[in-house]
Each structure stands twice: as structure tokens, then as C-alpha cells.
Length: 357
Image (cartoon, rainbow, N blue to C red; front, top):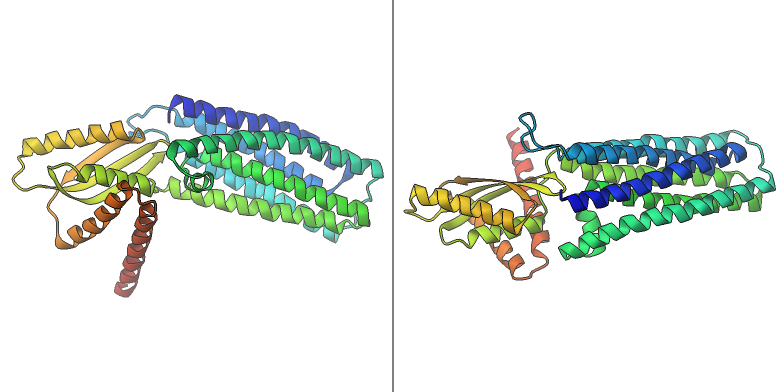
């Protein structure tokens, strides 16, 4: 990860940490006075977010460690591990407590707040909304800037980004702003009707929202942690670049792994043209590695395997090469077609294993 990108992510997380800590203290104080289920749920939410920012800051520090003999590819996956812990924290601390508090309030009678206590709650929620909104705005600006650099739409980049830190902050702050709105509605209905059911219901809905956020964040991070491949567009770009060399007859297989948000491992099986001398194969392999690193800064590790091809390999390679060429020509749907092709092959392989077993 570049120093500028790391600094930007660290600044985003630090802002979120400071914001959530102040909000957590204020919400806890207001919840203790009013005993509002929605307010207590929001307090638990903010404490969970505060803890999660510590996880994310830890991930940035640990991921910056240089590679060593024990971790020859570096410590980039620390980013994924600590983000996964953050997702678990959201689920257990935030979602779990919010749902429990809402159910407990429905089943047990609580004291009716004084009118002044309602206004204290609104004041805390109002300030929280402004602070969370500022943190969310910074996170969204960073996501938007990254999307523009990569030529993607905002939503496409947010969905496909391999940077779990900013995605976590954006998800948490989006949930926080939505949770504040839900809590305000629940408390307002409680005040208007005199029924604490609305307050409790808001707490449960906030818990369900947090559970969904935690699941989505955990799912994406889990895929990265266990070795997800690089973005399909990058893979097609690599395929096209390598296949254009006159010494290359076909790129038979391209394997990639996302080692960190800005660190990709690339391994390729290449069928070189006939009668190419071994010395030239070594030289071309070195040239390919240097070209890939220069063209795509995220490509840090390149391994090439010169091999002969079977008919089946060449047929599949031909299909993928057509998609790579189409992508290079500006076909924006080629990356999606590659993903669909790979998913179809995965289903076929799974079905074959099932029949054999």
C-alpha cells in the first residue's frame, strides 16, 4: 500500500475513532438517564464502532511490517484479519446488545421518561448525527476519489474495493447515521403515543441493521482472508498484455491472489512459441515481470511457468483471451462475463465431484 493511501486511510479511521468515542460517552450518559432502549442500543453501537476503529488502526500498523522469512509475502493480510474481527465486534456487541435491549424492553416495564429527558435524548442524537455525518462524508470522499482514479462508478468501487479499512468505516458510519434516524423516530413515537413499544422496536431494527452490516463486511473480508483472486478487470488486462508479446503463443492459466489492498500475486502458465531457446524464454519471463510491475503497481510478485498446452487448455485460454481482447477494446461487460464463466466452471467442477463421490 502506498504511503499516501495508508496515510489517508489512517486519517479516516482516526476521525471515525474520535467521533465514535465522544458519541459513545454522550449516548451512554443519555441512555443511563432516560433508560431509552433505542438510546442504549445506539450507545452499544457507538462503543462497538469505537472498538472497531482500534482494530482497524491495529491492522494498518501491523500490515506495514516488511516481509521476513516467516512471512515472505509480507503482512498485508493483517488488514483482512483485523477487519474480520471488527465485523464480529459489530455483530456481537452492537447487534446482539441492541436486539437484546429491545426484546427486554418489550417484555419488561420501564419507567416513563420525564418530558425533559426526551429533549436531552434529541439533543444527543442531533449532535451525534452531525458528528457521524462528518465522519461518513470523509469516508465517502475517499471512496469516491479511489473510484475516480480507477475509472469506476462510486457504487461499483464500493462493492469491488479490496480495501477493507475504508469499506468498514463507510459501512459503520452509514449504519450509524441510519441508526440515529431510526432511534429518533422510535423515541418520537414513544413521546407522542406514550407507548415504549416504538422505542423497543427501534432498538430491534437497529440491531437487525447492524447484523446485516456485520454479515456483509465479514463475508467480503473472509473471501480476501482465505485468498480471493484479483479484480477481473486487472486479470483481463494482465492476460491481454502478456498475450500480445510475439514470443507468447497462449496464456494457458492465470492465477492471482490479493495479498493486501495494494499487493497482488500473479502466477501464469504460458505456452511460448515453438523453437524459442531456453535463454530467450528466461529473458522474456524477466521482461514480462518488469512490464507488469511497471504497468500495474499493485502487482508485486510474478511467477511464470513455461509449459506445453493440451487441447482443452487451449480452448479455455482462447475464450478467456477473447474476453481480454474485448476488455482492452473497451467492452465494459467483459469482466462480468469472465466472472460468470468462472462461476459456471466452478459449478461444473462441483457437480463432477459430486457424481464421482
